[in-house]
Image (cartoon, rainbow, N blue to C red; front, side, top):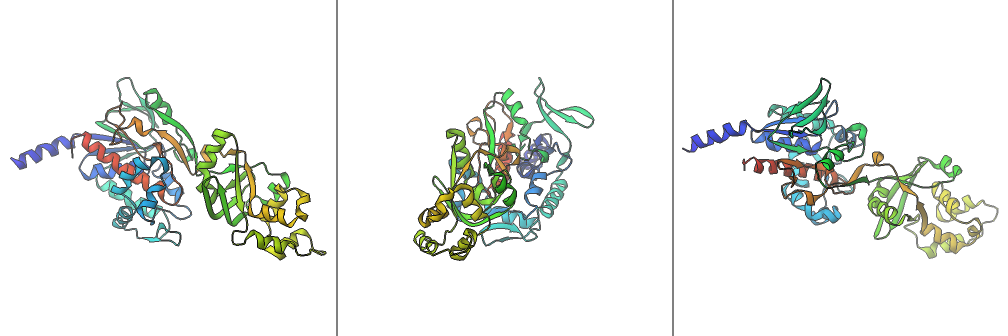
Amino acid sequence: MICNREFFLYNELMKKTVAIIGGGPAGLMAAEVLSERGVKVDVYDSMPSLGRKFLMAGKSGLNLTHSEPFEQFAARYGNRREQIEPMIKSFGADQLREWARELGVETFVGTSGRVFPKEMKASPLLRAWLKRLDAAGVNFYLRHKWLGWNADQSLKFETPEGQKNIRADAVVLALGGGSWARLGSSGEWVHWLNQAGVKVETLKPSNCGFDVAWSPHFREKFDGQPLKSVVLSFESFHQQGEFIVTKNGVQGSLVYAASALMRDALETKNKAVMLLDMAPDRAREWLVAQLSKPRGSRSMASHLEKTVGLKGVKVGLLHEFMPKEDFANAEKLADFIKQMPIPLTATRPLDEAISSAGGVTFEALDKNLMLRNLPGIFCAGEMLDWEAPTGGYLLTACFASGRAAGAGVMQWLGIL
């Protein structure tokens, strides 16, 4: 009886087809979970190849996850911690590293606590993963752009051969956010979900740069220059690091870390001024004492470098924002060095951002990531309404939510 029942369930399972739309980490992880149980899985992607944004993220070294303690790790997801935490408890940093090892990719922990593949590249990992999925029977359909649903609820795709209509027993949407449209994350899916009555928060830049109204002289002279060993402060945020001056404003890791707070301030108050401590290892009193020394015939630039070690773009910022007459006042000069105000005028466009905030609200989903008003349709990855800083947190949650969606599909299909 047991064997007959298992045979019956297996036959029923093999009749089930799941369509996964989006071939990034979340979609591929959902495909892995389902294919391991023998479900027929078809992955559709609008691009000519899979995992394009994943590969781009690993271009300068794939930051796969982070090694910090779980409590600290989970806190990185801010006001969506409650929703993300169960997923990363089930498949977090340790599980992700073991998963990569099983694919033949060893990882290491860098000095910052970030976790990287030993080869530093994303391509070997992706190749090994796709090979395993192919061996498990996953079918891949490239250049298939999802166009929503037909009147009969079948999936509508634009393909090189014309429109194609697909039916599936369940669907996982893993279409990414709205950044890096050229790699497939265009955010066009928002239109189709809105039409279907799904609540979607507006997509906006996350881990993004900002515009600053530089003078023509400063822009020309310092475009591309790094600001190293500075402390950026904004509201509750205080962190040391570095970022880059661009012709439009500022970008880089330290700016990205504070970007959510600064973006929201610009949105709600139409104002955001970040403060820089350009000499974090020096006390204000020491700066005043050094700057009070006679300058003699030296230029101000030479005086700043000789007395307090300030030069280059840091001196350029003093000239950009400090009244000329205050350079003769050692106390005011020290104040600007310790609290350089840089007014931000706007976030850089969404398409330039590392990631996006907004997306399908968790209130529109059940605990298994299935849309409440569209039974059998699941969502995963960056298209969900959450955000996190860079450092491996984005990828970890994408992988974890893909697995959660895959498990949700299995429950929906009665496999668990």
